[in-house]
Length: 257
Image 1 (cartoon, one colour):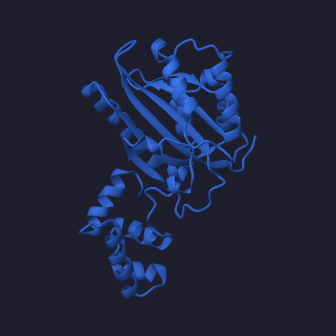
Image 2 (cartoon, one colour; image 1 turned 120 degrees about the vertical axis):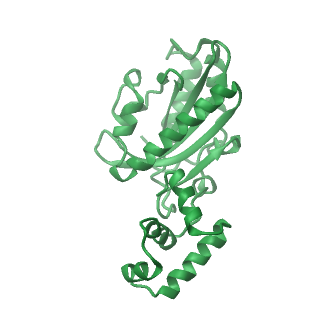
Image 3 (cartoon, one colour; image 1 turned 30 degrees about the vertical axis):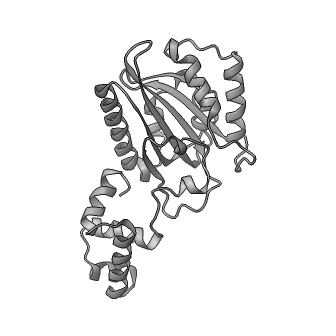
């Protein structure tokens, strides 16, 4: 297994899209692992240190998982279930993971009710591997409503080991939308999406969310109240929001605090 950043990669996920289109008509059931496309995609995931699975969000069922589930989660691909990913999550990321799962199901239900569309949900968590070590992992979810072979919302989820990336200050990448350019192999630009705060700014936001005043935060961080207020102004300038309360509500909704 290669735990460094793979170089020379095509940034698009052409093989994933090809996989999705080929097996969509059979509902991703009874896929032959010896199939040439499956073999090609399994080889690519070994190079990119990724594993993927396809699930039915309405039936809450994983239909197919790639073989690297063994090295990433220590689980045979035919026995992978969503609960395994959740219990493998770092304790400090559990609350955020729970919010993200709720958001995922809500988006899936919306697509099903609207009977059309797709959405990309992308963030990162620390997952425990079979060696007992936690690895920072990018989780990219492509949700898609489908009428054939039956009405449902399929989920294509790609998990990528991003331990090589050290520039996420406080660990949270986040994207939710319908721009397919975000569904690609991660680079620095993608991983910094939704991560606009410095470590100090994020510490201040977190303490504000706990109800501390500028004076209390200054004491806790060994800074002056003037410095804390300067940070607060910079935070609002970056986010173009009117108040830190508004920002805190949004970050809580996204599961970032």
